[in-house]
Image 1 (cartoon, rainbow, N blue to C red):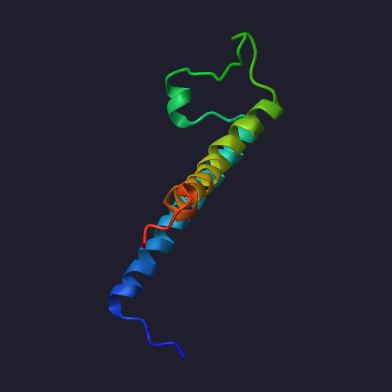
Image 2: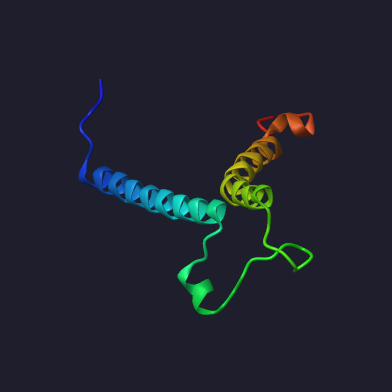
Length: 101
């Protein structure tokens, strides 16, 4: 039913696994730091503090959570939306006729 993968397929799958593991590690680190309100080493070194729009207080938990959700789910949802738009644009039904004629 299935054939054995070649060396090139094994290398690609290994690279893809490494990419997603790295992405998951970075994302989970950002999420935990964002929710708990911790600073990164660079922010601490440069004395950077996150503030809300009034620049008088630290963002609330809900604002930090919203930022995290937008940063993590935003690119994924945008990719899905753009693929659907591209599929719709490439669809011959969009123009009311078939290009095969």
